[in-house]
Length: 360
Image (cartoon, rainbow, N blue to C red):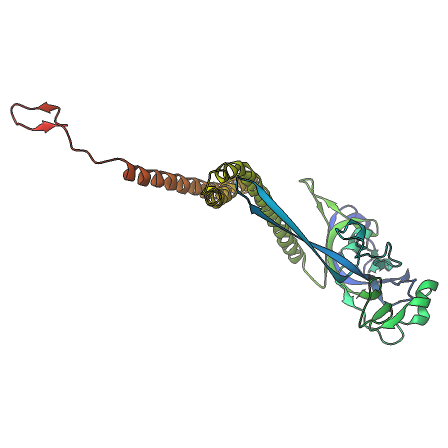
């Protein structure tokens, strides 16, 4: 669809592709921060990033085995000062009396957007505006960020201009707990490309036949094919991350099942700890292989309806892993048997009168 043409009602509810320049509508308001009086020209979005200097607790846990199959866990706590956008609750610290943070932040991070944002004869919906996220640092030209523009009385009394933002505290070079710094990022008007369902003079998510939704937007010019390709790439990354998490969870579950065996071996006098560690390493390898086989099987079953050839390929890999494990176990069994069975002489139990051959 042509963004410069008038709204075509015949495309109502249809999936459309559009590329053009986004800008603040003629009757709209640009993105601005009214508290600090920051009003960039032609800004689609403005982000205030507010950080406070606070104490942060780091916990380190070390677990060691003891004689008799038990364990001893040692936890150590360390503290450091850091900038954080969120309020860190020092009341939950192990040493909360020595390391204390303020109970509140006078200012928080916040996003501001122009309203409405136009794309030719159309306007972007809130869902599309949320997808505009290619922020750049806002550089102060001397007047854009100024203490004179601050409307909040508390900020007027405590904030000073520092670099490309504001600072609240005695010395920005040597911050103290409770000091705050505020900086800004913004997005200017520019070209975007989108695929969405046309809804009146704006856009909404398109409902697919498989029950999903489709709403794509990218910065710059992209063809419709490019937008679909980029979306598939993003979905593939997310999908494999979810699969990796599933594998890790499955591995941890199988490892927990094998832990009682390690504890039993740990209780053996003199060699228990060594035997338990050895068994722990062996079970880790085995559970990793089993978790991989189960994960691949799950993926293959999920893909069967859409990619049957790939399903059979993955199931073949699982079969190969199972076969290798079986061969490894049998080989170990044969080696142990060969060492334990003694060699004995054959004893004749029948004699052939014609040939004189002995049969065993």
